[in-house]
Length: 227
Image 1 (tube, rainbow, N blue to C red):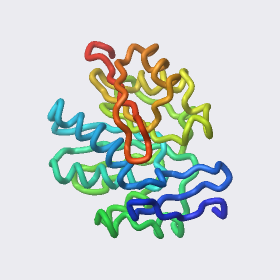
Image 2: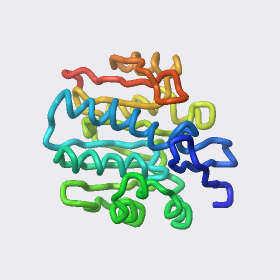
Image 3: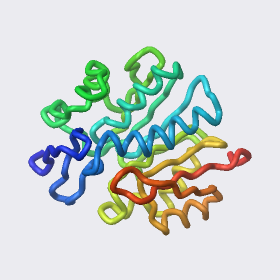
């Protein structure tokens, strides 16, 4: 993993720089700040506030550092909701990389963070009571989902300029078909083509204020009657 470099972002939390892609895993303006704003506040907390579920199924595209998973554990424990969390990652980090990240120094949950990284791939594992994790060592192209499986999608792939194939309509359609009625899709990206494609899939699209250093982000909703 010589092409992966540890960096410190503006909120003091770490991110990683993929030197081959010249792309960071999280915003240089604040890794925890960005993930909390996009995926927790405008994704998980929004969904919980709207539907008050006792349990929720989440799909994450881009496990990466495990930060979104860790923040989801923190939120789920605070609210007392059960989570089944499925995440995709084709290039898992080596332990010497993820173990150097300082997220648990800021958020806590050191044991859970180690467990989510050390848990087996392609097997549903219980991380904590009420929190099950399925890490798929697959690309989005390879993954097969049951229709209507997920209530919430964290779309956290590398940017369209770096991995454009992950943002094309056929893969977005695969995601949409895997979403349950009323499901919510959130991403840090706010490109016009993404919004047009989501609308093509009959989803309603909101452009929201982005995290620090980013003007906008996107949240999309699957209609209630759409299976």
